[in-house]
Image (cartoon, rainbow, N blue to C red):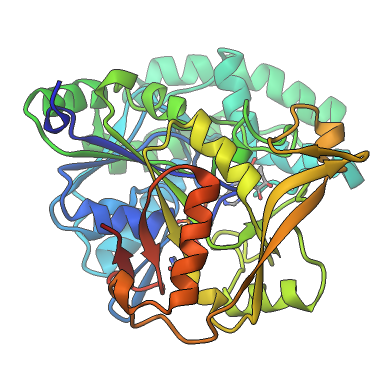
Length: 430
Ligand code: GDP
Ligand code: IMO
Ligand code: MG
């Protein structure tokens, strides 16, 4: 089958999130007919900078700022309708047309008790808390798996909605009041909010997105699937339990959109030129010194959603190599290379040491992963601003060498380099 017969691409994170998926999605959206979010919810914060305006998107696909693309919230997403409505109206207020947003009827709803349960679980975990975004993501996906979730399509059928809410609330209120000593929630208040206030505002956007996307594929339309979170936050492949509750990896792109694996052509893995993580969990290359502080300050590493200070460290090639494999990434985009402009020397983790042994891949056992020590290669920094570079040739030789070194470590082509937050601050590689 010729390549052009499969115009479906995926953009996904290869680290612990915030790699710059929003910016790259926006850039690729200019040539896409559809941009589809396939998992996660408003735990995501995807930044798109257009001119001197910055947009932080949480539920709406980052293609919304490109006029061409229709934006689909896929079946794998969990939707808090109040947040979605606010996001749409704030975009409208900034002159962005949101009539192009489609929401899968099969996407699950985040309900008020999910938020409450996320907060309570974190509180009861105490020092073992995961550091979730407290958006109700985990409890909503748990209900989906437990088959007591409410779906976006239920907003269209008040009788079914009330029935399902009733069933779910019986259990939720027992847990909230008897386990967590909280006040029970009122079913009437929730159904008034969801059915009378939210449903009329999103009704016209609810659609059979799987069929729409499959028809688009049959018509050879260009589709871009946008991942949220990242490979090492994946429920199966991440550093469990310090993960999110969905599947940001490439397999999730299929299940979360209804596009089969063989219908996908290109998988672009995004990796920051260094590494960050927000929330708890192991992080072998974390720098708790002034170099880490510098990465955070220069890279403006504060959460888009929660404002939390991120943790920072050197690029971990062992992790990204693993991500390349399990996502079958066809290319890698390296973002935020400009953040390293002022570093005299830059380290890259190429392997781990554990009890005198050398590991060149991610150990499956978390107790081992928590204790590995990074083995670094040290490279000379370029010490020149690169934010105005637009071609490989115009990058300093040492910056090119850094990228070539990463490419050799990852064993896959680096196709794009980010040199700043703006839309055009990209270098495309041949
Ligand atoms: P996402 O969650 O993967 O979409 O990433 P976030 O938007 O949470 O975080 C990435 C941050 O880096 C945002 O503030 C972007 O504007 C910014 N950014 C993206 N690419 C680049 C780049 O190449 N250089 C710099 N300096 N900033 C970038
Ligand atoms: P984007 O799409 C970075 C992290 C949280 C926490 C863990 C579980 O912007 O890259 P959750 O609320 O999902 O149950 O929290 O996952 N996390 C993210 N970290 N970027 C994100 O999204 C994240 N979404 C969730 O900090 O450690
Ligand atoms: Mg983010």
